[in-house]
Image 1: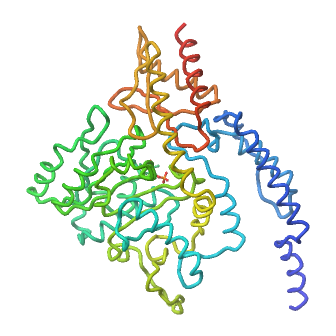
Image 2: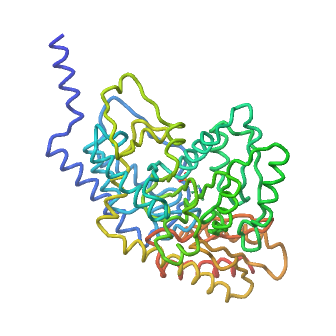
Length: 476
Ligand SMILES: *Cc1c(COP(=O)(O)O)cnc(C)c1O
């Protein structure tokens, strides 16, 4: 057996490269990322997908790092959307701050487990400090808590199950629960309801006005009617920045109705939450402090790489009711009086130490450049809108609340919907800028979502040139 152990050890030790090998690996990887980043300013935001036939497979034997990086370059990085590019203005991007990559590197090397205070008090404190900062930014009280999640969808899920526990409704009555939202609410909310077992809950879609904002005027009447017919008004969702149009719902009025009728009030601020770093947006989003739960997405308007969301929660008791668990093998854990364990407030147990990828850039740069970048993106959206509006035949959506704007071309003859379908296709095929489109109440709109920290005025000017060029080409 001893011999066998020794033989296995020799092979197993290959999992720890020696210092020289490590240095070589790191150098190769850094050379690779440096090349990627140096090409980025002039690189496409979209590449036609590579052939689906994929040679990748695993084997018993090692492969050289240069071969692997080559594969990554040709088969992964320059394929589909270039999400790191300042030309990516589709969906809701973010870019991916470089120090976050270094934070991930540091987190992975030490492999600290930040899910529970006892095994890594410093890591747990770091994540809780970030949550406290976000709570403060949203006007939440100091005893509010939260969790760093993998994204807005999981944040919405945590919010929904916490609300479900707080409502103390038996499963047999789930079909009596009513959720109020606009048809512009993010689909992850419906998904969360279904995962939370509330698929039978009734959804009341409130209409949006001409500015794509949820129209509050009927909300209270609908709630009263629902109550009168024996239903249970359960959850009101406000969007702080809808994904489609970037519009801010009337948060303060919705909060008042929620409070008056004791309905759980959730603000989905996955896209727009961090714009509250700007005083004018704080003013525009008053009432958010009355929410029960808030969803944020640092991988959107805080520019982190994909994989970091956040949920903020006031009611720790219901949060624990939904998520806290203990097990025999965890018996030596000592709870901290002041620090919440991430594992007690989320579906995760073992988790990525994702606080480090958020903490490092915020500390390294300070908050000021984040604030500047957010204001710059808002102004760029207004600039684009003003410029395109001046062009013959272009129609624009209302003045944006944040940094998403929309436009469409209305040809003198023929179908506007079909024309814009061809226009977005031509822009995407060009690849220098990536935009996505949407349909609202039967109208086809092309969206410009300016959220990547690398998007500056030069990219917007390039976009204006591309749009005009493609429109002219389609018009002949
Ligand atoms: C992006 C988004 C979500 C979902 O977040 P993910 O991070 O993609 O899971 C939820 N709500 C809104 C408003 C969003 O923009």
